[in-house]
Length: 86
Image 1 (cartoon, rainbow, N blue to C red):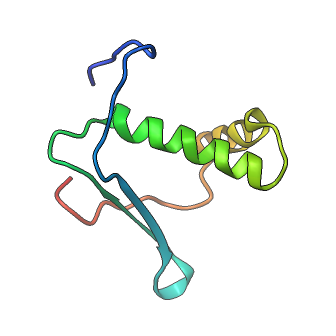
Image 2: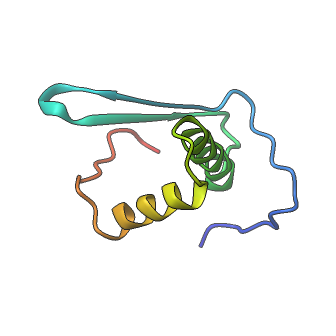
């Protein structure tokens, strides 16, 4: 089970990159790039920030975006495939 830390703890991550782009057959390729010590919680914070930015961009409540994301997690419309070692 991944280590869980308190949300009040600062978790800086240096140079986090989440790159999503379309490849052949309209499939989405997502690359997670960060330092070797990066944990799931580091990228979770980046994803939370992205949700906030999407909500601001579309003048929506972040919870509405998060609810939609949760529906996608519960019933995925695409299959996830791991391409790399991590």
